[in-house]
Every structure is written in structure tokens, then in C-alpha cells.
Length: 369
Image (cartoon, rainbow, N blue to C red; front, side):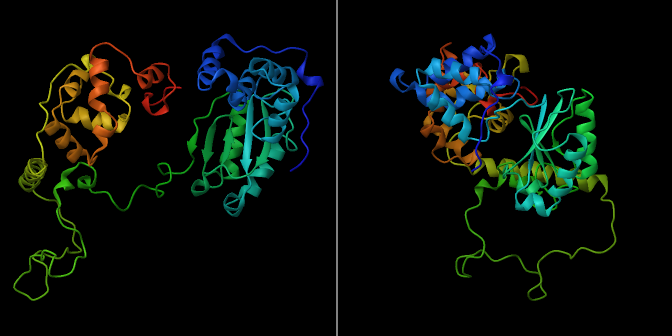
């Protein structure tokens, strides 16, 4: 590993954490006993870097050492070892360009040329202090290569043209939305998904399936056959597209609803009573440990909106919901009912406190910082 030294002259003589950072510091210190609080050195160095325009000055490292009661040299050792810590000033927008093999094979070297053209040599900072860049090892987004991380966000599936446009906008003070820069969602195929598109894969209607595919013939249910031997009892699709009459579409939709209802009837246990309420009256079910945004949506679709409803679940209700959500044993294991009783009575749990303070990523609303 290359020798890394911090910039003494650029760091000034003093550093202080921002007032709004203090709750985060207390959160991390609260994770460790008083005599083990030096275990928080990495998160506190990260917070110091955030408060110091993206890099660690020597006074910032000393401040962290004083907070943790550590010798200065021990903090310096940590800061100089991990490349996540920058030891010299960086731009307002610091670009970390992945140059590891998958990104290199997909064009990372061409992206480097763009950075050199728009910014300069590695770790150079533009005269207006807006942009800087460096090459880093794998950032864990190989499927979306080539990509860069700018401050805290990923910009993926890049081309020299798209990166040039991104840097041009950031250089002019215009924010750029992170994410994919081709027509695909996350790491799905370009143009949209081509397989696993059936709604029944995700709506719980398949929970009633009792058998497994590809079982021996003696155990597997035979597929209905037509009179012609070996031919499935259905018409093969033709090459001629046709629009189904509205009556057929309506019948198909009604059959789908009936199939879902039949599937629900086959789930063991008793379905909880639904509750129809105004959306503003609903509780934030994500304050229950184990209930993320997706689980909350599924519960809401069942008419479950209040802590008091979950608190009143019987063992038969728990069994039914676990069957519907394919959560065998999870609700009891994570104590949803006990948590809901505490929250319904106006109390708090350790998890709900973390949600309320914004420390649980999966409980934040989409688009929230």
C-alpha cells in the first residue's frame, strides 16, 4: 500500500463538529461502553470528514482523538490506512472512478480520459473548488459498469459522453440525479424485464401450491391432456395477434379475482379483520422491527393500518398472515405483536426510536435524505 500523508498546511489550526452532527456522534458513542468508546473511531472520523468539506485535516483528527480519549498517533494510523478517508482537500463534488476489471472491460479507461480532460490529474482540484477525482478499487456495482461514485451517490452505466455531461453540469453548480444512465431499472435488462413478469409470482396467490415441479411421475399431478396423445389441453398460440373482446377480458379479470380469493381461503389460520380508514389516520407500521416499506404495503392491502390491529392478532391471525406473506415463523420470531402493543399504548421501542431519528434507511420515505 502506498504511503499516505495528510496535508498539514491546508488544514489550519482548528476544527469543530457542526452542531447538527452532535446527535450522530452521541448515537455512535452510545453503541459502546465508556471504556470501549474508541471503537467508534471510524464513524467519528467519517463524520469529521463530512463536516470538513470531504477531507480530514490534522486538527479534525485531533478533535476525534480528544473525544475518544485516544493518543493522536492511533487516530492518525486509522485515517492513513483506510482510503475512504481523504487526507488532502477535495472538490465540492469528489469523483471516485472504479477502475477494477469489470469496469475496465466496460470502458473505465475512457472515463478516466474524461476526468483528466475536465478536472486534471488524479486528486487535482479545479480552480473553482467544485470538482476533483481519483481512481479507486471495486465499488461493488460491477453489473452496472462502468460507474463512478460522486460524494455519496452512484452514477452507473456510463459512457464518456454521459460522464462529460454530468461533470459539466456539476461544474456549473447544477445537481445531477444519480442512478442508471441507460434505459433500465437498477440491474434489470435494458428496456425492462423479459422474464418473471407474472403478477401471481408476487401477490401471494401461489402460497396454496402443495406440490413441487419435476417430481417423479407417481407423485406429480398429471397435466390435463387433450384427446391427441401428449398434446396439452390448450390451443397453441398463433402468429396472428388479435384483440380479445371486452367481455373476454372482463371474464378473465373476474376469474383472476376468484382465483386469488380461493388461494386465500386455502391459507391456514384466520385472516385478520380489515379496517377501512383515512390514510392520514394510519400508523407508520415501519416503526415495527421487521416491517419495511414492502411489508407495510402488503399489510395495508389487507386492511391492516393500525398498531392496535396487529396488537390484537390471535395465534390464528399470525398463522394466516405468515402464510399469506410467506413468512413462516417470522412474525412470532420478531415479536410484531409485542412491539405493536407497546406502540399502540403510546410507548416506544429501541427500534422505533431509531426510525424516528432517521437512522433506519429502509424506514425512510422514498426520496427522503
